[in-house]
Amino acid sequence: MISRILKLPFGRKSFFLFGPRQTGKSTLVRHALQGREHAEVDLVLEMENALFAIEIKSVPMVRAGDLRGLQSFVEDYPEARPICISAADRPYMAGDIPVIPWQMSFKADYLDL
Image (cartoon, one colour):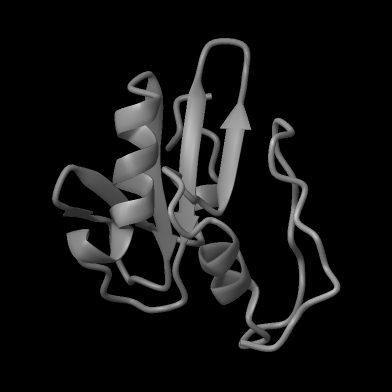
């Protein structure tokens, strides 16, 4: 692997890693966390009375195996409500995790807010 000059701020509570698609963000995180226990999700939203763990997929069909990071996060934080937002046409379940079309994710009534 090419030596990187970017040092990820592990040990802190959280951080964001932004960049265009296919530039190696996930590979960098996997490599940096190699040998550590971790649960990577795309977004964690903490509200007064709810904790949401959100995974975002650009494909219409998401399977439970595609959501291992989300499942691992929920094992570590059982109070979290897992949600996968995708390019699906309709909501469905991938194992125990609801997969919802991205258009629905902007409706407050869907998340009981």
